[in-house]
Length: 338
Image (cartoon, rainbow, N blue to C red; front, side, top):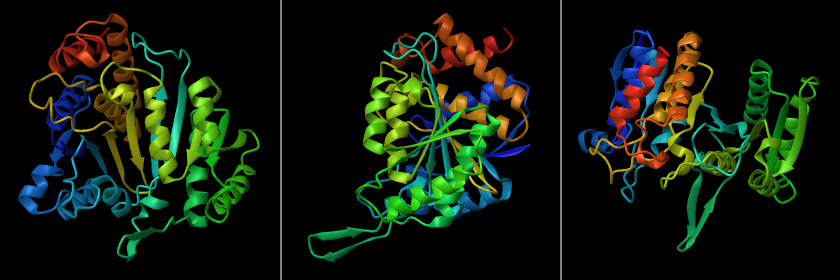
């Protein structure tokens, strides 16, 4: 089985190689096809996301991606935005759940954030009207809105989830979010066996901070999803500056292609020191295995991560240990057979 591997930059090569070790130890034979992205790609090809990388994903259909830095102030478009739009990866899926051994004030976080990935303000439709005045267009289409809400309901149905919450600001953005809300209500009628609720995005933020156990599957437009998915990751803790971002997996899914990725940054300040936490990439690899038909191996990896956190041996500094990328990876591999 051939899968594209985008190592990225900063700590990217270290954490993606850790994930590759774990996948191999889980008994899944993968021929990783490396593709460039990030600062090294910009230096070599003049573009942080070369077209050849997109073509490789189109050829092999699935990729595991490490963190990539988009050079700032040099006219480059966001790597993630371009990848999601270029491959029509319309759904971002971020599962967030409380993990053992991680300090957090919340005991029962178990939710999934579903984010529309291709429209909204992140569609990149902006221009300078006159000097000093910039206008951005918030793009919402009926087809994309219905597609992402239906995706959320199907995800809930297949994973045994009971509640879908649609997050909006239709009281202010009456046309754009009004259309999205109308679409959400229409799609919800097709799933009478799943509870549906609609909440303003500011209320969602407040309620997540108070008691995240009230949520199950949340679905929303692009910018709201960017904010809420990171907020949700913070709910499950982690002592480092990235909080829970070093722990949660991520998936970007489309009709034909899929890219699984860590959602944290490239952390250039610790690159090469061997102390980066690889759990987010490892758990993303577990989601990838489930996607390509190796669900049992993916579940074994998830259980091994949980056993490693429970034991508290070999953990990296951001989650309370003194170990290294290698020690925590070794412990996860050891616990695959436990």
